Length: 347
Image (cartoon, rainbow, N blue to C red):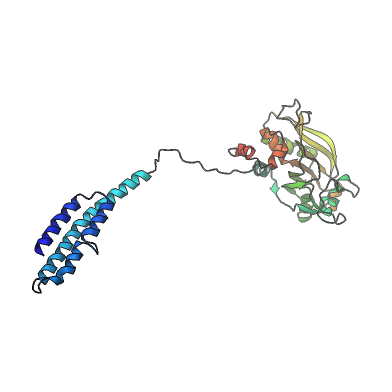
């Protein structure tokens, strides 16, 4: 048995020196110190020895197992470390390569314009308020001095939600908040109302059935048309620059008297005429005027004591003017190529 132990020791140590990878190391372990290896085989053969020789042979075999296991451990650690180094080298990240830029969203141009106008009017002393998009005929028409026979109350111009007799409608403008605000507050009042409006009309490059509008209202003593003109001129200056020309022209709106339409010379064609401005050189921004006395009376104000002005502007047209967009339908078209043009724009 002693000769066999010496032979196993020399052969196992010699083979361990030639191990170079994990697979050959596992083969070596199975062959010499595994459950079916040479050391286990020797221990099982102790029964064939003389009784007095068994203790010494058993101790020598166990000592050999311990020696081979001690030799095995550093080789195993070395091979595992080498394998890890190779794997790290293969999977390493080159931090000098450019990364993948995330597709970051941005505010819709209409939303950005709303935020800008709220800030502009805040500097002029106006507070932003918001109202329902589904309105009653009382607020959408009656309190705004729009009589029952007015064309705006026809089913062909207004989107009716319920029985036409009940006049539950999608608001055709943000003007109902004039009446709602004046019913709730006493003068002085300076508010703006941004929000969506709806009209049953044909779509073209400058008209949509759903559009975003800004209503403005100021009520106090001694407010005049000059105050309205100053506010609209300051708005045009802030949005489009001092070079843009502003036009106020007499117009009719039931809830103001006198009424004007507010237009800015077309930035797309520089006033020469194009399809957006309908070849007029001017792009209509909205309507304005002095609050009609009937509107003031309808909410309990004394028109002999208080006066006010109101205006309504289309956000889409403001953005079209500012950034040269030639078709209002693009804002609701979900064309990412169009929307991404505004991703880096800080309005």
